[in-house]
Length: 149
Image (cartoon, rainbow, N blue to C red; front, top):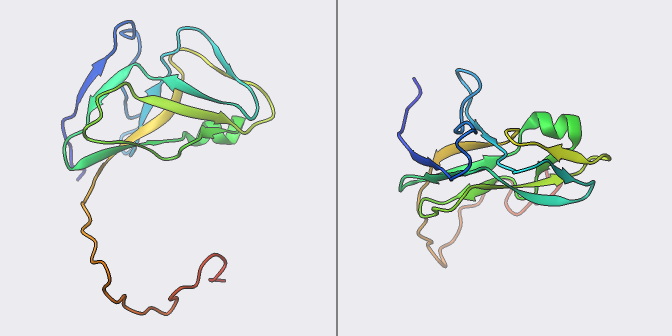
């Protein structure tokens, strides 16, 4: 059974024609976010642009919302998020923006209503650092990049 949580959302003026973030399948983890661009917007190869979504959310305390790329855009066009995943903190009340970057070889056109990213809600915990305490040893220990085969 999937836990449901109620989250307040508001469309910004002039975006009433766009859908709220929504699940595209019954068991999807992420809800698609739509582009609230006023007109077609080109993202040239190597370029990044902040794409508005027209929505503001009130993430509940103890949660965060992650903004993730859409795999279809990455596969078909080389378009992803420049800051994946992006984080919407519980105290943020501004418009959700999606920072798209075009790694493809052709310009990518963003049209009003295009599904440009996904939003996923997660619980968070707060860390209290135990400064100066000895760390327990592991088999890997300080083995870094390329350590495992």
